[in-house]
Image (cartoon, rainbow, N blue to C red):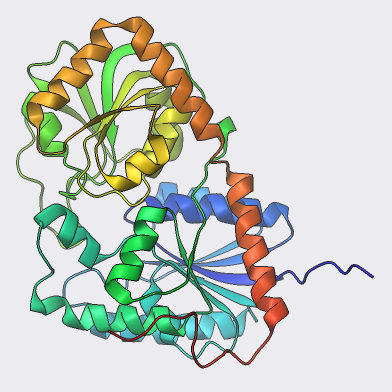
Length: 377
């Protein structure tokens, strides 16, 4: 007789508050709640802003807990990482969580006693390769070791794109793993009446986003360029002076969605972007896309966007001006990008994670000694 696969009642999920992982965590938590799964969300990096806290509190099945522990990708984080480890273990035990879902794979090496999912949203070593064109310096050896230990210890490894999974395999010898693409609720992002504007959004301080390339060409473009996001990193480093862009600051989800609904073009000439939630949101909002020509963005948006080499400012200018000059091309690309974006839905994402949780719960404990198939570097 068919039996319904076991589902977790409560999961512990970690997220940082300084990037797209936060938005991803809330979207997934909202969808899991509709399936009857409660989420204990542990926020790290810095305390949630009032807007972030309100967004989290609006999800009735989510319990938000925050502590400003430094994350493994920050400078000199390891004392904080060890303290955060004790805090996370206590949360999981106190709420009797059935599954642990970790946005930072380092924490998967802890003695959880329940199935663990380690999600490689990004990593320092692959960032260095893409942005600096070189291996990470020796100061990051401990990071490599702790990441490898976490990935080896987890019961399942997930990446948001094949490109990112390939990097986890290359850098940390993950032999298995699966791709679960991020998703957004299309009802939150709808095309509006378009203004003659170009928009970019994200962590403007992160050179992987390559916002300075947009700044370089902005004053030569026919339309103004707006940039939404924080210009100061969690370590206090300020982005070099950005001239020619209209800086909007850090926007809440509703205000950013409103800006995207009105922007005709969304540009992200990224050097590094393992998935790119801002691109997905812009596509759902009916923006024509101009993107960095990198494997992950090609994987997700090939055929529905214009691609430019991240270091070719002239190509970036030509691509944006081509869309400005040709309304038919602009609207056609926007329509195709939106159709693609609709396939990356939030419900589809949540279903894939629930199936993974059920698979791990069905397998039961104890965890096999070989973990998910990663080997120590």
